[in-house]
Structure formats: structure tokens, C-alpha cells
Amino acid sequence: MSQAKWYVVHTYSGYENKVAENIEKVVENRKLHELIEEVRIPTEMVSEINKDGKTVQAERKLFPSYVLVKMVMTDESWYIVRNTRGVTGFVGPGSKPVPLTEKEVAALGVDRGGSAVEVTFKVGDSVNVIGGSFDGFVGRVTAIDTEAQTAEVVVSMFGRETPVSLPLSQIKAEE
Image (cartoon, helix red, strand yellow):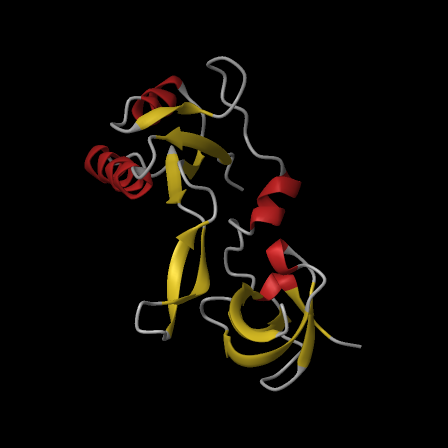
């Protein structure tokens, strides 16, 4: 069992991808895989209407200006992450980073690993949304992507049918 924990790193706005890339590059170059295991930028798929009036899927950052890093906290790993260009610091009081709790990690869905969410519904089924911004909505499943752990659900919003992409962990079959 790894002793690495998830930490939240604050970055300059718009630097999330560059920070993640730079940390991964340093880990690769210095062979520090045992100290810094993973770097993630939580995103979600959203439906947007482009200027042609067509609905397109776009990836949106869940937490702009933040990057999640799974690492073993040592002076060396702290120094590497803290001094990466674009990083303003760790989230925590003063200069002491605080790891995410198991509950926070589960709520964010960042540490799924190999365990997939069990799908108890199929395309065409009615489902209840049980988390996120659409919590409490009822919708109809139009597509399921088990690899990405998401489903396309059409919900009725403001009297209109609106397609949304939701993590499987936020959907349950209607009883």
C-alpha cells in the first residue's frame, strides 16, 4: 500500500495544464515516480452551443487554478512541486500542505483506480441525478461511456430538453 496522498496545488489562472506537464516532466527526468505518483486536473464534459447553433461537447475544468498531485510528502517532493513554474503554493495553512481526506478523494472521484462504477441502467432508462450541479434532476440516458465513466443524460431544464454529460457516480437508476 502506497503512503502517497492527494494534495491540492494552487496555480496561476490558465496554468493548470502547464504545471501538470512540468511536474510530470521533472518526475520522469529525475526518476521520482516513487515520490510523485500522479498529477490530475479534474475536468467534466459539458454540452455547449457553438456560434452555429450546434450542440458540442467541451471539456471544462472543475476547479480552475487547481491541480491535484498524489505524492509522498518529503522535503524533496515539496520543493519540486512548490518551485514548479506557475505554482503559487499548496492548499493548507501557512506553508504546510494538508492532504485530502479519504472522503474528499471519494467525493472528487480522483482515485477511482481500476474500480469502475457499476452501471444499473441502460440507454433509454430514466435516472435520478444524485450529485453535482444537476443533483435532484431526473433525466433519460442517451449514451453511456464506461471507459470515461460518464453518461449522456437529457434533463428538462427551464422547460427545454438539455443534454448533459455526467459521471456515472452521480447517476442512479430510477426506482
